Image (cartoon, rainbow, N blue to C red; front, side, top):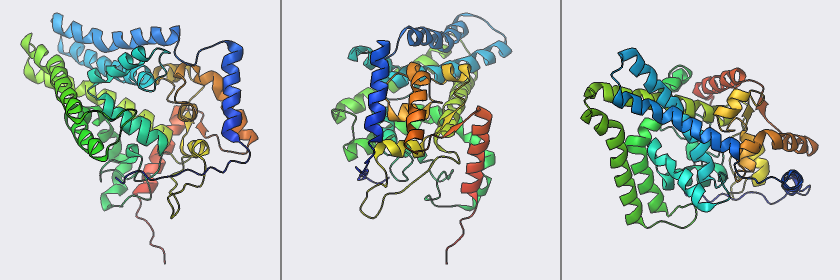
Length: 365
């Protein structure tokens, strides 16, 4: 990946973002609300941790039949994804609470999800939120050579089958976090001197990474084996938990960015993007199923991707309310507000996009 040197246009004569920001701020002032989480988020936090951790303790303490053990590992995977989307995500964006220590604590829950705070904040807060859908800068678009998400990526013959095999790879997302990705990212980010806030001491970052990985593997693999659960059941359960969480997290992300409606622009020869940063977010992000209460609740508002990308400092519990303001303002300024009415339509669009990106590019004359 290239070192980010992208500049966004400063030309916004109609003052879209200034107008939108003022309207959103007025909403919170009029309603006398904080932009951070509230009791709804706190209750959801408890619920997600119950889904995630209760099955773990049941597996450790009860002699359950195989089908029950399998079901509990699946529930853990669902809870793992829920904690990531609802708790960790808001915490690392600083939107969970008005108190910094609470945000730091909630953001640190990524350690029990197999991730690392420093790596996640650089990849997500810095690279993805700043350079959304820009090839060579937004790492969330990268999938090695196995998947081709953008026409700017190199095409390989096997990509023509990616709309068939992609979903099987999505489940490996958090499994890779646990074993390899964090080590590669730490090495790369420290070398490039990237950070979200103060640049960390390299020795401290490596120490935190190694120690938390050892603790993580001890909790999820060593302890279950020590309490007499057969080793192969432990490894199988570990894999299933991660696979379920990986599929959920990957699909939610793909439906917001890797679909037919999302643009994937490149800068001009000077490294300047056509639009301002806020307008760029409108072109590169897509909402889905925003009227579905279950989807809204479980995905942590990540189906409100437009609102999240323009206002990442606002907790997701407010996205449904401010979405009307964002949508009306975008329409007023003749700007796009991309959304799919249902999850089904978004999924179809994602696989249509994969099929299109998997087709052999036509060589221009």
